[in-house]
Length: 433
Image 1: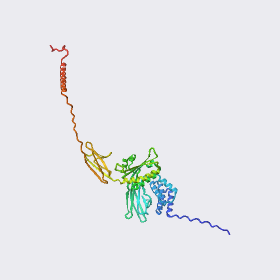
Image 2: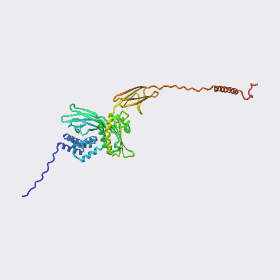
Image 3: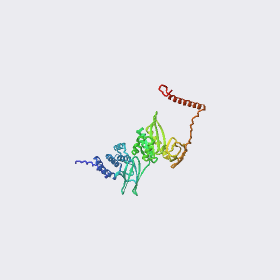
Image 4: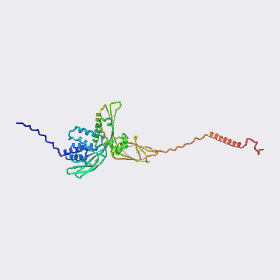
């Protein structure tokens, strides 16, 4: 009797979930560059089962559609998702995309109950809580969150480089958008140490967050004032840029190599946009330092410097004078002409008020914190001195000889006239005897 071997059973086909089937359909449509069909399938797949891989698929679609900022926003949150499946090839692809230049953008932190789907301009971008703020292009957008039984939406207006908080009230359905305070950052650290650019940027952001502020890079601020680009290294130009961007403080970080040595000199300056004197300054030498040592030095120095600067109180000085248009100086700094109103640090200050033709006024005042000090001064005119100039009197004997001289000259003149009337020859004169 012939023995028949039983054929091995085939493993049952893998059953795909509805979300996975839609993802496959979306990726197939993406390969065919049918973007509308791809978005319909991929967004519905994410709606059914939100995941890091769903963000990856939506990010790849946005990249294919040349929606660069949306792609970077989605792919960044894919990288930050701790639940994503290991995929080295995709990780390398995403990191290459993230290394590219980011278009102008504002950041929006969304605060609402967890579990809601989030969409911007009717395109799904994630599920709450988001692992990082949304990156949105400058301008108007419509932000929406969707629960199983309720959908809330509202308009938001985003500025380049600024960070916002958007808070939905689930009970009232209202959206509150708040602009977070920012510090304008002007830094050349990465120019000197390009290999440590990412680490230096991270330290600056963390330090600024430690004083409850956000970072506004000067490149983003220049979008609203491009004419200031060539002077952004100067203090007064930085203050003008901060005023244009509507931020109070400026952080200027510079790094240069120590001459005749192996190391660096780190200088950090914090300024207020309306006050000439810095709020805080520190210079730190780092001899024989590596790039990692400079990053550590920045991390140790910057948080305390920012805290010190932001704690300083300011005051307002108001000066009026009679006469008007007198010059007001504080040390070597010229504050302006009267009537004057200037913001200064709430410290003792030496003032000089002067005007042409008047005695200068010197005074020391202590400016009160968060208040206005008013000075009303009457300048005293300088004493007018009349200077009389008299010619020296001529002595008597000199006057006698003067009149003698005049008489002789007069007689000579008369004689000359008479002589001139008498002809020198008598031959032609008939009336003479």
